[in-house]
Length: 360
Image 1: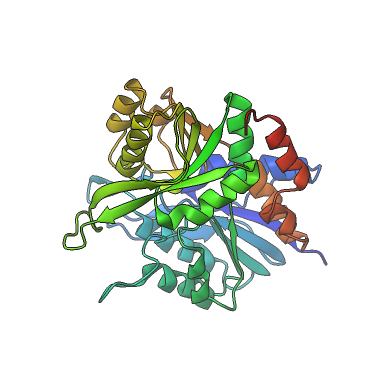
Image 2: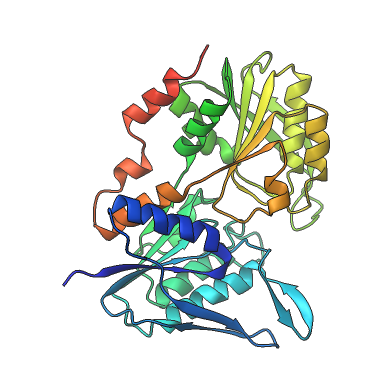
């Protein structure tokens, strides 16, 4: 008997989950609803529970959760409480526990990997990302699916469990090149840690790479990290070039904007800030000001993590829909097909991108 495919879409991912459901219907020429019916409830003291409302025997389950969605709220002791990544991760574990072992296979999709930035230990620190992955393995999860992991080597924490790390690079580039008239392009990494990602972008469009070295004050810790003293640029001249500054996420965005300012001082033409996740942890006032001062042309990001509607409406933000790509990933895994074409875009896709570029 064939297993059923079901999506358990957490409340923090409803919009993306509904789009994936529609894309799965298109892929499979079906009107079937792939969304699993369940309840996610909170008690007034903040404790929670998840209850499935339909049987999942003989079901391959895909749990989708945006652990970065701070827009999700609940009432606790008569206060409105915004959910943290810790609470979203606990809800993933509740969802797994609610299956009571009846699901044939459990896949956890965290587009933004939980605790991704706490991927290595300095001194007596907790190693949260590794611990969380091991927790999921012990609970019986069969597969982890994520996007643009801050440090892909974190998969070594679960060497016997599939850890599928995808990049939405080709989807972002296709939309970027469709929207913008790019000429004489240079890809720039904002720091040494993002070089592999920058190389991937540069390879896709057959161009050069520049990189900034972040000199930090290792004697201080501000907001959990050593403050940056100086950005030093190394690479081809950005003069009269269209620059793609690429990173996995924009957190506060201060570092990205400093990089854009440095490039503008070196006579870069257009600067596009590209990240898989745009968190804007300190708001968008700095971005509005920088955009008005023509420090950058546009920010390109994805809908893989929560972005408030007022930020989506800004003239400088372009949000790329990744639901079709995610549906293809789910469908490929479910049908036990080769994932290689999804990890590495086809030559025709690269040719399509290159054919729209000028002057490279």
